[in-house]
Image (cartoon, rainbow, N blue to C red; front, side, top):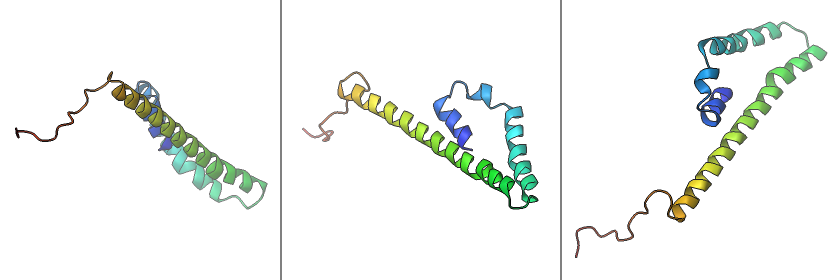
Length: 102
């Protein structure tokens, strides 16, 4: 889910080329098959590796994705605000809020 959001926000023009039906199917299969295959293992060094692969790595990826989304959003809003303040962007709203009164 985080990868999908990352692509939609950070790479909107490449989203449809990357997230094709086959890619989504592979992600869904991995999401359902990988955890069930790992449940039968005993707690040992492989269990630790499973923990790292199924918990720590995805959480790090999610944190990276959302940090990147936040950074891009912040930069975009900062640029828009600077354009607006310099008069290059959207027309400034009128200061007079009294409409129709003389």
